[in-house]
Length: 108
Image 1 (tube, rainbow, N blue to C red):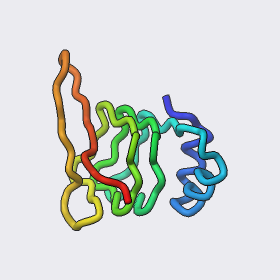
Image 2: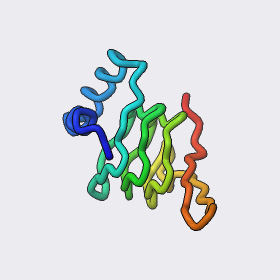
Image 3: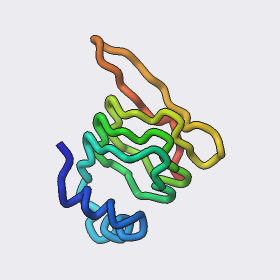
């Protein structure tokens, strides 16, 4: 389950979230099972190394979001947008009956 402190910080917005990440670079945020309403704005969010297992990020604005090392097992990224106004590039692999979602984006 997600760490409630991490969820509370993210709810304050990307600016607050990124400032917290800068102050705590050694923490891998646990946002597993996160549910964001369709169209949520995570533009520019630092999600590097975040645990996003089974997170729902449908139609989320992920433009310029940093996802390197994020753990996206069973994450729902359908119709999420990346740097371009197009769906995020994802690969869905099936292994032993469970799906693994891996973002194929490059961070800057």
